[in-house]
Length: 370
Image (cartoon, rainbow, N blue to C red; front, side):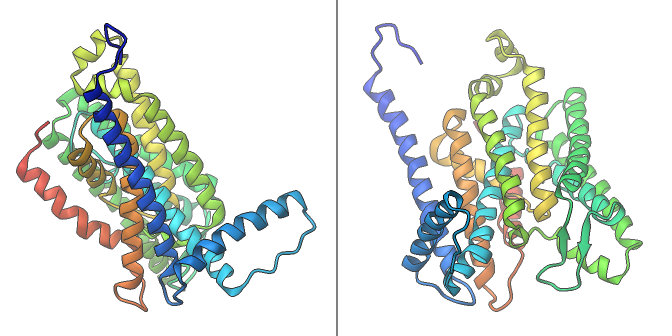
């Protein structure tokens, strides 16, 4: 932002500083929550031991990278942290960031406060594509154990199939928004229709599956971050970081679109191109997360609205703030899901649905005020 005399008003600097401090505070809270999440479980580990295990593990892996012949001797605590809990906690953060940034982008692109991968049917489309890949193309190994219901042995083909169907749902959403407008009512009805269609397709596949496959696929459709390995986490993190950087780079375009298509065009924004590319990127993030973790609902809807209440609608702060809030919300939900009915572990999607459904109804009843 430029000012006539070159000086930046103190009030504006304070305004920006408060928002930066809020985001920084969220990052600190997310790190503390990461330590707490890893420390709780069937085997309790003191938080300081978790911190030391993470630091020592990073140092050991750097040393191993520089000296390939080195033999590591991890303790039992290190095995629990690095092989089980750290990948699960990081998967929750990455999935929360990905779903939230996709949701905030969709809400801005479509100028619709109810936009998110779940409410628009994109997550269910990705779930159907992944189910086609797992059952029909055989890219997943079925198991009867609850802890490891489906193992994806070809994540690239599975993600590609999920992405194709996410793109199909995205194309339908964009077409409807251009023909009928992107009003909340139209988008909600379109999302309900698409969700029903792709859910029916998944049920059709399940009908022809044997008992073990049926149980495995039903369990897989419950969103659960505990099934992500380091390899899958790496793929999700790469796509999520790239998408987040793309959305942040287009923050001014989204601010212009928030003011209306005509205003954005007057400011030189190619609205159609920004909208189409943004929806494709959001669909890709949703596809990757769904193909590895299953359907996790309402995170992309709830987190942007929580952040709006705290720091406003400015996309410069709303996008990174939503990323941080998404990581906090999904990691906290996963932590609670692991301990609320111990020794049983609930899929995290159960808690996000309990949280998101009332918020969704509230937004419908209350309406939306900018």
